[in-house]
Length: 450
Image 1 (tube, rainbow, N blue to C red):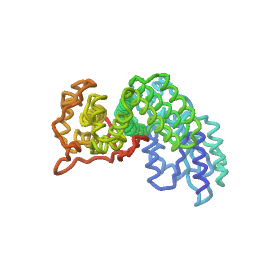
Image 2 (image 1 turned 135 degrees about the vertical axis):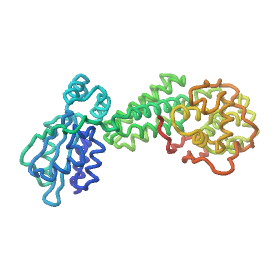
Image 3 (image 1 turned 90 degrees about the horizontal axis):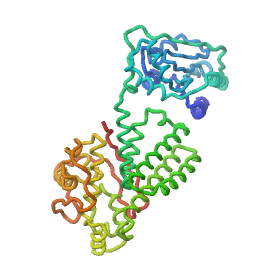
Image 4 (image 1 turned 120 degrees about the vertical axis):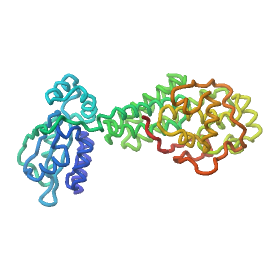
């Protein structure tokens, strides 16, 4: 039913309500339960079995106004004519914003203890707020437009199931999801503060994955704009930590906030987010290298954009638009580090962030930052941070001083040599870029933080 699909997209865009077609068999019912049922005992009509049983005897001429024991509402109607029609569920939604005192009283009436408050709040706040009368009118109008206007309104208040104490979906009871999102946000802020756009892009992906089940993860543009505002706040936090001028940060942030208000699609908004990260990271790097020559800045940019790739002085010099000997001398003179030391330092800084904010194995972290040989990575990391990667992950060690850089064991001009035998699995990293601008936006999959 193409008209139903169009109407569903319009309703979701205008109201935030999910529109679920229930004509796709058990899969559709199971999908609705997995997404929207917090407690099978308290929401029997939100389970696949409960919905299937109800639909077998439901009146196609009625528009059902569902109100469950958790103060969550939904609308159920039959759309279309005869066998060409199908049952459609609008919602769920809530009528009011979160009120903790009222929520505690409601749970107490259902015989549920304080331990349910956190999952209930996570679930409740993930739902859109809607005006019941307006949404019921939308339901009647939808039925009419699809050839079957409901003849009557019927309030449906299913009682809680009588079996056992209510259980709650792990989807909303898992505090680990919150912890993973915050860990990814910490990694994002740290990457911005160092001007490391590649790591920032990875952290953005992690934030998106960890936020998939919350309100700001929906496809609605108002929710996407709210998500973009949160991201701009994190960017400002990282830029402030870097020492970048607040006036400059605010100027860039306000420019992009204005442009984002005119974004018409999620794709456009995502592209603006990436451009904002790109520009702020360039400003941070430019500030930190204000005393460096153009060739040394270009070399440092190229190194940081291609950390996970084998790097040679010759290719770095080519990217810096100078010859190798001149670059080597200028780099040491201006940064106090050799090219090899600078590469090792930046790889270790990136690895340190990953070790503290993800549960990726040490071998995976080594591969992600450009070391195929895990043992060699551990030696370089210990030279930089004074402790092994495992000890660093456990909370030991401290940030190294800016000067000097790690002194890894001798290696060839091309950097650390790949280990012989089996290699650690490495997600796809950023492709080498001939010029430092614009920065790449890689899409490696990072394991979620615990």
